[in-house]
Length: 397
Image (spheres, one colour):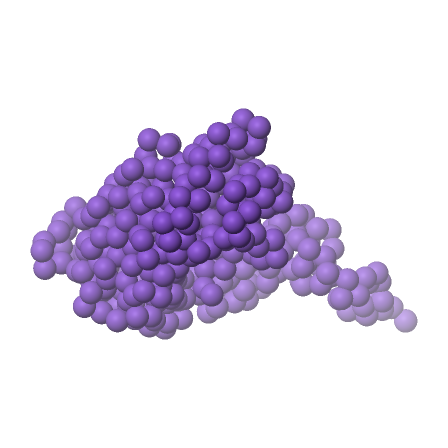
């Protein structure tokens, strides 16, 4: 008797589903490899679909948008929409946006460059009760009407936990204009913002409950440099228990005074300095430490685990000696009880640039084993703590 196709598939399968599951788990962060394997194995293709289609990037590519829409229209492939949890989109395809998101029932994370009326209304009408993460970047608000549209969209997001505002520019602003963030928010990421934008956000936080519910704030060195002392209004709007993560990319030592002015008004009891390992980092930190608020007796320095080609200790012993002295001076003044050093892996899920982006190249956490050699006096006095156990960076504690 001739075997049916389903019987042949079951009998000819060489690997169990458990083996496929192990392969998929290993390549979870390597989607191109998953796709290539799926091309040569029908069983594997079926099992890997939830991972291959979990994150879809359609930004700045109208051809991809059309192909993806056709995939969702076809009866035999429309089911793939249920696997999509993250969507990156571009403003030039605003008209197709609603057609797409109505076929993505599991969508919880959305990233958009620029913002148009159709996008705002689509998010408000179709994603308001399920979107947990929103990333907005390269958005310029020129008219009051545009500001109200943005505010209306944010107000509709009842379960939003993470909001990233990158390069947001309020061209139209009045003294009565404030941006009210969703009350469900746990993590706020701010990047490449000027003082005016920070003021609009801070004023909204003053009159809302955000300061009591926010767990973590990300802020980059560029925003601190642009806003300078103007950041103080923003810091006053936050609670003492909100964790502040200062993201350092490759700041020049000459920028240290401006960035220091930006963080001087921090009120939080917990500060994490996230940084990339590079040649001038230690010298920069030595200039930054004196500006930390006096009440901040405990803070953390968290390195990205990929070492820069410029991070050789032998070329930078002077910078580490300066950092050792700065730490020692702060301790002697009674302003430092503990500084923790970590080197954690970033998954890129909440941040797309800076020291919190996914590092390129092989992982290198050896800096932790060298801290005792690089900071001998601070280590000897017992206020330096090296955490080599924590492997992954967590935006929410």
